[in-house]
Amino acid sequence: MTQSSTNTNNRKKAPSANLYTRAEAIKKLHLPKSTFHDYVTMGKIRKIVPPGKKEGYYDKKEIDELSNAMQLFILQYTSETSKFSVATEGDIAGIYDVIASLWGRAVSIPIELRKSWYQKNPFIDYVVKQQDIIVGYLNIQPFKPDTLKLMMEGKKRGWEIKPDDIYTFEPGNSYDCFIGLAVRQDIPNHKTYGMRLIMGFYHVLADFAHRGIKIRKLCATSDRPDGMKLCEDLGFIKYPPAEGSTFNRYELDLETSEAMFAKKYQEAIKEHETTNPEAK
Image 1 (cartoon, helix red, strand yellow):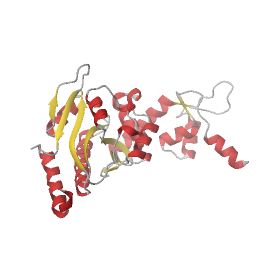
Image 2: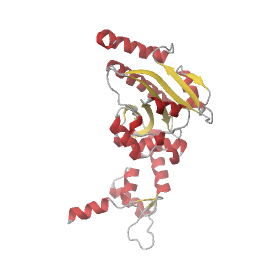
Image 3: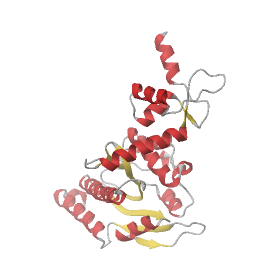
Image 4: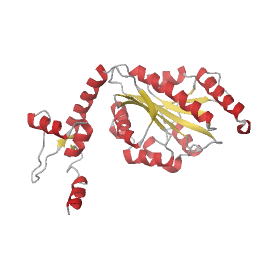
């Protein structure tokens, strides 16, 4: 009986999409339960009890703003080095928040959808963390040809991607990949985190090369000045937006480009082929 009651409570949801349950608010704020209770008692966190309800709920906007303020305070005064790593399911909520901070929640990839991507290919997202807070992420998707074409033309968006649109990275195969990068702009030194992502990305590509996973081409789209400049700085070739789209298109042929980023990747491929002649 006790176990059944506990499971029921865990499944309880807020009566409105604009509210968090107590458990959801605590998780969002990364606070101990006792501290959260103290903040509610002191009035620092507003508790809402809807008519006819006994339990209290918490305004989602207020909790999100408090969470953001707490993260900014930590990031402003931290002296720890940022960390780059492959993303796991536990990082998906943080990736969602990064995207939402730039473009809004309406265009953020639903958490469950991104989980389904990871089940198909667990090596498509990479994050930079500071004090365990995700400050930026990079996405490299080995799309099937038709999906890649639609993405480049702006006829398909990220939230429409299904697991069947994505290949699994496998040694001995070659892929054309669609990439995206995002860094929170409301934090100190955000450009430094962007460079940390780029450095980490090179190591990911080198690791792919050493595992016999070849990336033929990187593709991207952007309508933001910082995104367009980054593509051009890395040696991507710029193409005008497709008809009906406002996004410039960018491609980097990793097999033939003379850009420094591509040359480094080509060196990693040659190193792999030298030690593994059968991989040529």
